[in-house]
Image 1: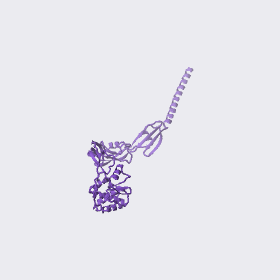
Image 2 (image 1 turned 45 degrees about the vertical axis):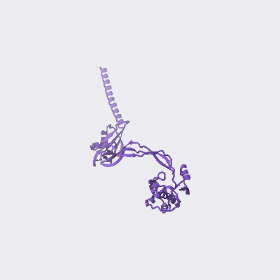
Image 3 (image 1 turned 120 degrees about the vertical axis):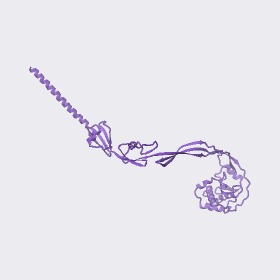
Length: 364
């Protein structure tokens, strides 16, 4: 009987021991878990403030409550969740953004929203080509403003000529040569499409949308023809030339372009050559006609793009117009340093040499 009692007592002792052991294990496990969880770190970003805290919480709402942080109406936050015991909780405070469209400005409350989301909140619909500043995918910041420009456009077309070129002559003409048109050139044509862009009804820009060539130009074909030099016919060099102020200006510019900064007598001789041609029956009887004669001088329009001639040039021109004859009736001059071999040969063998000055040789 005693053995049975002893056995039962020992069984009870073991049961109590195991029970106490379970309680101890539970307490130790709880303590250890709490130590692990409290080692979690959360970085909190709230506007310009940024700081880190330890927490045993695992969700944004609980962490906000733990830190006493209140989200006002329209405030939002994002929580990354824990990874390697670290997480980030970002708070976005609501603010107003002015939105201007169709001449009306409306304030829209946003928080960590894109421009497009703000427009959606304001029930603003965009056309396919409307322009928005900032771009619709931009994240809004406090202080931003949104502007919507309604875009419309008009298109129109203009026909334009394409200039034709020339072919057949690849050298400078000699004085006894002239150009002859073998085949007339034909300009081409293109159609340019323009687009006028209007922002909110006001013209903003005009852009080229397309250039379409309707027809290609056909080059003018030229050839060189020899011109026999007629025998000089007499004319009076001492007769004054009664030119206008425009003639004086034009002749002064021609002299400047032909010889630049030559001496006064050199300038006067060149001016006399031009005026002698006007007086000679061998050349056109107007100043502009002489200057524009094919193969002789530069295009008249080029004289107006150069700088103003010197006062001494105008003085030389006026002396020539008054009937001076320092060029001794010369009708031609050339610069050997710049002339082609064929041109030089024609001057030297077909004409009568008069004099030479500062690199120019004068003939009649």
